[in-house]
Length: 111
Length: 118
Image: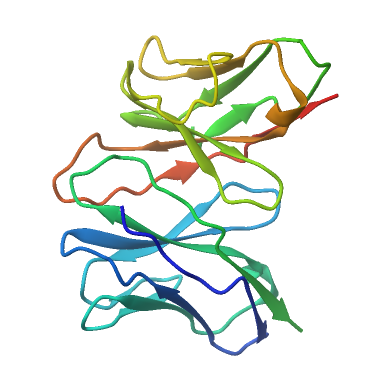
């Protein structure tokens, strides 16, 4: 599975949009991009995933560049409860079922 | 149940003791995963079950680690002769489907079992 690169940490003001970048320059055509987050003392929580089209759900939006080499997770109106480590994961279609986590981005939402 | 349940939430063991960690996945979920998470790190894959079959155990760090899911539902991760380096949070996750060519693989995680080996 392709490797991903994320910033170690980011800060965001409460109520503002949080934009979390992820580079996956070696992604293959059949690999999906997944985002999970992990709030302190909890297990990781699924947020969103996509292949090549932009995706939106009740939690977030996922913007994937046309060449698919990078993506951005957008939390439109960040709250203090969005403070967490955010993981960007690439997984091959039909490949191993496991998800391979990196170190993620520690997002701190400030009041 | 509504989510993945893990027990115990906290376990303190003396070095050399055996421990057993339990995972109750979401009812009907075919796939079950165990991950190990050291402090400040991302979760590291340990092993994967599809129903009762252990299809991937490539992440188990040593032969002291053993996992089972005999009836395809509840799973137990056993660590024999615990060492200090085994101290970590052990996460269990389940997903509805087994191998799917569509690729969508949404895992639901439990809160984890925090193991401290003294």
